Image (tube, rainbow, N blue to C red; front, side, top):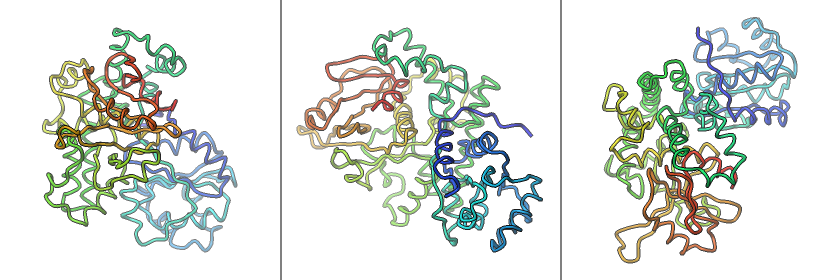
Length: 451
């Protein structure tokens, strides 16, 4: 069996914070889409931070382990039998038990209440919410859980993985030099960014790239992951509606509509679909971006739940989904995207990337539109809204250079007292235009961290 590749992940620090703050008072649930690295992270943390640990992978365990959770009245026997089965000695307050793929054993999820109250050991659960909720409908969900979201590897983590992190580390600490980046350096940095655009942040895809340096082989890995997602959607929705919605995401974004028009895909939206969309959102395979009816701090207070856009949670998967009509995306397509020579407009791909970057920092996605005064059939559109203290940062995304930025200009005029500064995220070198900042995509996550 091949040993999983261990990558540096920022979320590791959140696990350390939980361990210090909790001291056994609650369990940790790492939730995220399938194949984002939850199991690998949990075991690596256990190896580094505890004297001993036990992994219960409920997708593989036998009946002897499952039966242990039938009754939790005798915890002494429970721990005795568990250590005997796994041949591991647990140390009180210095050992952790990992419930991997916990959705496959609802009774184990329910037992957390009693195990945490016992206090002898720490507990980490991993799972995908799209399966957890489906398989735990009839059990008592423990309140003794601290939940953290795990996303695909972000751009900085990607560069760490492929050994290209030095430049980005320098940019983190040298903001004063951002606007000294010339076109030549920008082309080099954007080529690395496009590589991330193609590969994405799924650890298995990155491992395949490191092993083969072949983007077609990477594409095969991404297609296997997407097929797992389709299988999950089919389990919760045998009608195929969710799979159809997921498959349509690239096409809907290319139309540059003001929102994701479900009616164009399904006709009239059935009420029952709202529950399915909620489950799709919680699967973390997608990112929902809601229209804000009033762009003011506290976007959630002005969220218009019926108008939204949907992005794929990982842009590497998005690219594969966009070219799903081919058996495997060939090297010609990948090479042209990497060299910025593909004739197809990639604005929708870069918009998906910006959404992923925002979500990776734990921010919720919102956008804003309003009609033009001279033509009510046309609308201005702000792709994303960010906040900085009590001010707003409107964000427009461009896949190339720019000629005009009318929406940003009108927004700043309309909401001048609320706006900190307008931001354009694009592919060219950093530039200032009056009060507008224009930065390339590789600087966008750093910029957001500084807000």
